[in-house]
Amino acid sequence: MQRAPLFEPFQLPCGVTLSNRIAKSAMSDSLGDGTGHPTAQQIRLYQRWAAGGLALSIIGEVQLTADYAENPGNLVLNEASDLERFRELARHGGESGTKLWLQLGHAGALAYAPTSRPKGPSAFNLPGLCCVEITRDEIRQLPEQFARTARLAQQAGFGGVQIHAAHGFLLGQFLSPLFNKRSDEYGGAIANRMRPLLEAVEATRAAVGPRFPIAVKLNSSDELEGGFDEDDALKVMAALDGSSIDLIDISGGTYFPGAKSASDRAGHGPYFLEFARRARAVTSKPLMLTGGFKTRAQAEDAVASGAVDFVGLARALVLEPSLPILWKADRKPEPLFPRFSDAPEGGVTAWYTMRLAEIGADKETPDFAELGQAIRNYEAGNRSRTEVWLRHFSNESGQSKE
Image 1 (cartoon, rainbow, N blue to C red):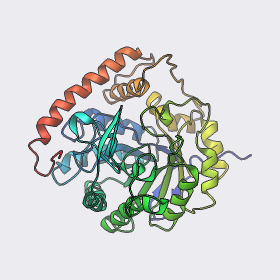
Image 2 (cartoon, helix red, strand yellow; image 1 turned 90 degrees about the vertical axis):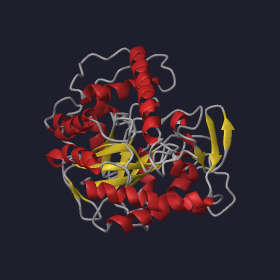
Image 3 (cartoon, rainbow, N blue to C red; image 1 turned 60 degrees about the vertical axis):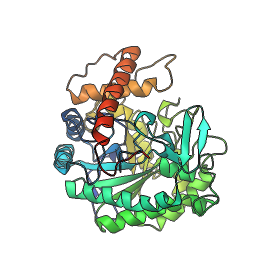
């Protein structure tokens, strides 16, 4: 078979061209300063990824407000933000022809409790999941919140946005029968559960115009019994096919208590490739697949097969920020992944997060840091940023946690 066109350009429906088929998928890098603004370390991280040959780089979990952040290191972009600090991130992360997008996030029921009062589609009081129910009026405000942050992203010079409807965060919670027990127009049938997502897409497009890329990150399934499944996911895909979005980023898994995230699952290949093949039958939108790509051959085969148009890499790019350039030069087809035994829940994510901090400081080494120390450093960073967050946002009007 002819090798895949990993390094051929691709034009999105809005008219924007991406230089190749390799994307840095969204990760929560936890490198914000605690006030919702970028740091020099974070700017350097995305600058290094841009220099590594990516076509597309997506900053994870950029919050619409400070009320429901996933982590105190998240960015927050709204009218209270210092837009010039975001412009600097957009400039450097968009060097070398890389398109830098913001993933628009709202953690909902999974909001970081020390800085939030979590709210989800339905109330829960379970170990690891305690939230109140979001009101209908608050749901109706969501589309304009997504639109507002997307408009500011455009003004700051970012190349596009991705609306986050996966991994158990708010829009994904609405999609999932496990999270969403509502009996109003936002619950029950999948047509109702997808309503907040479709309304967010429509409002965002109206805010940014026809030429600005909008993507959606969508689970293939929650991978939990009774949760959002592949049949419902295909129905959402079909609905998105009639929208103005430019790309669907397919992933899977959720952070529902006791569930494993997609990034922590075992396996040797792309996790959701078979679902992507099914999705081709219901949508003509460009598709990106995130999860499980570890080698160049896997990435090439996925694109060559026609199942997807883009491959989303995350942890591979934490281990080797210049991987696209190395792949193009036929070097380092497979990064060396660390192996951790008996890692506590969230421990591997903490290790990779601290590796991101090392890259942003230009201090990474070929040796893998000890897991326990990485977890301690991660937790200390969260404690420090939580203190800053609470001081800063308690003084911000319109940022109440109530």
